Image 1 (spheres, rainbow, N blue to C red):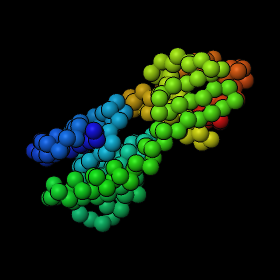
Image 2 (cartoon, one colour):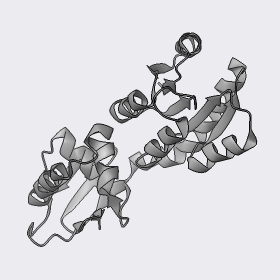
Image 3 (cartoon, one colour):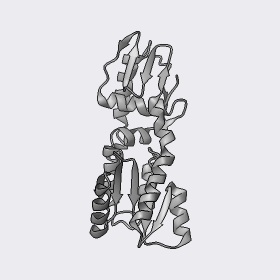
Length: 226
């Protein structure tokens, strides 16, 4: 089932969206402010976000930027703001579409379906496996094999490994990793990364003290090299 995160501070709009979406077999989470939206997104991993810009604690554009720091989930802005410069700002920040209030439910649903379809090639990467000279990461089965034996990883270790592998060859910032794996409230807890990267190296690297695959870029982040 497609999971939708609805972010709006107007209870009647949230209620209408939740009722209509659940009637069409969507799974729905709802947030009434930006901070809750970012936490829910990190915890629940929605397939699409429907976001109002006028939130009580922060502007919706800041929520878009926060999400884009670690995820490519489709974001559809749902707002009463009609000015073209505000639409451009939201789209430039990373929104995928913009629907103005008042809106038709059929139109919004059609745009949601289109946004999810466009995102499918990205999620299709789940079917791939990454092979190194020492171990294999099967993203679809969520397994790691080293020397013919499955390696036992904790859920947190797997999540960290998955984020790095999906960005193979690219630097992933400390903030991105912390937000993706632990959530926005942990974005300064860099000691978490040191501990868990050490555990991954111990389980997967031939020489953990001289890693070939899990590379540290001091002060910036980490990079996975196959």
